[in-house]
Length: 269
Image (cartoon, rainbow, N blue to C red; front, side):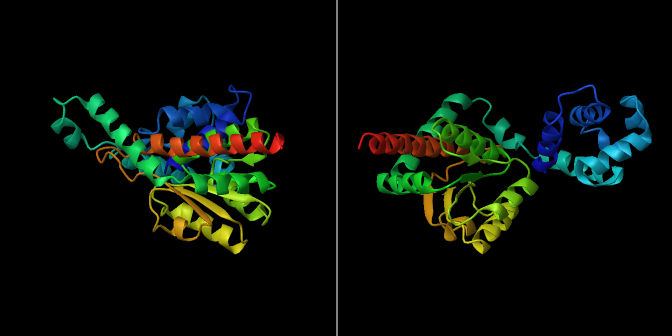
């Protein structure tokens, strides 16, 4: 359901005119996503100073859906977010030093990740990246932010890299790859429905996959040429990966360091 908000963000960011009616509607939905399920199309139109017909056209252009389906997207998203934090677990530890405990967990997670990473494996992956015609990085929700981070790092080193946001564009990208390209898939669990769907597309096209995951037994890991494993440590009270993303970023930065060193050695030969 994060894809719903991601699509809205992409829709908004794709326009340079934020006074355009469609952007006004999208921004209203972003602000009022919790109220949207109980609103009528007339109320939304009135709030956006437009007509119900325009709201209907927005729904079709946004995701080829009806206003009723848009409300269902918003309802499901809201229900998902209601369980973002397990407040009972948080309240139970309110008298503890939460921030100090968090940093202790970060330190342990990074230590475990460092122990799992192998220099030889990192060098092999750096060589595959160097040899690939294109590197496509995949990830959803928070992992997508890490995918974009990875993309920018490699672009700055002169490597052609892509990292698309929404699911449809990622599947389209996977279908366009050739065996001369390389797919890097970032997923803490390696088992989400979309990642499984994506990996199946990559397998069908015989695209070499590098997995960044905490689960070596996952569908993603089992179907990857190379696996960079990180700590499976997480903080159970939170759905957002406040611990996992630090270790995943450390893995990405490790690849960056080894890849940049590889380029330097090749250029100095």
